[in-house]
View: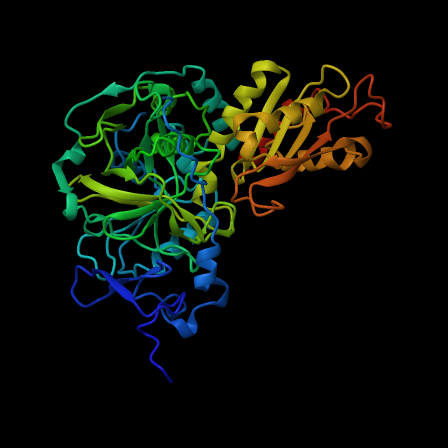
Length: 82
Length: 474
């Protein structure tokens, strides 16, 4: 079985950023995904931290990210009258 | 009783038996959110929760459910904790009559004690952030009052805005924000982005309880939230200038985060379990860069859980959604008696009104749809007679049972705007809306076979008092 601890639980991306360490050393880490920007704490239940236990309805794919609607829409630039 | 900061209110809640300290060590997740999820299930007198023993943290203080019951909402307004829901709404209306009350400018805010700037402005160093629901995309801040100004009219204090918006933590100095297009900050951002500018913001956390109430009140665009806070508190709201942006912020906040919404930038955000009881996202949304964090020594992080209603957010946006709708409707239609917009921030609105003539109730219902708040909410409007209490749902159901005939009493208006988070929309942001006329038809609308309605016997009120005394003496 492959090691899934280094994958983003939500999008399976392999680049995970270390964000913050517990003030009491060694208790937990806050990690963030470089692609879908999911962020979690390593001490959370497996359903939030392990790819194999992550609920399907919350998974995200690169296609989902590309298709995500823009809220609010960026308006056209208005240039001053010349 | 007006509180100048969150700490003062937490002390008052504790004295009233409305604050529950959890002394045991808890996990940051899922314990804290699960406890806040459960707290409102304790009923109308559910307490606020306070955690200060959180695994892995050395110095965390987290308060939740501060507004999460009718008792706590009453205390926030300085009312006795037993005050009923309808009475709280009526008192809110009376106090609104004194609006506007100018804020009081004060120096030396307690949050000036500590500052992190530039690369050091790491939000994780200040706040014991925790995650809420399983599907949330990250750590959220969802009870902060965000202050911004209209870039086209920055000196107009009415057009400045203090509002609560969902904020996702994306990194040490990076946040996301959801400016729903119907809300004021979206207008500020629109103007800034048209000009190719960033929008300066101050994100204020851990505020005295009336600031959270006004920041989630759907006021009109040019109405000043601090001036409503003064009216509700019965004392001017203390404010001060934020050091970096100069924005007017609450004097008593625990934490003030300053930075900018980066103009014309969008990035994947969410999902997040929303006030609709459904997740929303992922969408690409604006990004905030943090430039400065000011905070009180030993800050209290006030957080809010929201989920399957009712949770704290439902209490926070109950009375304050009813009152502006009532004020706006009665301006032109003094026949309107009461407005109940307590459900899901007014996605359903119940209005009781007298009728001038046949068709009047439907017209009042249509007006709800075109109020500023109704544009984004009010998917269903139920209009009832003036003798039906819209806060008494059994009475509303009686009106629906006997006064409503689908032949003539349902007005469906196609293709109206609704906030993009409303799950029932055909396409996000557009929905049909429904006015249900559950009033007794009056001339010249002569539908139905109503005869004469049974009224309470004239002696019944006296007997109610007599029975209550007898029951109390048992």
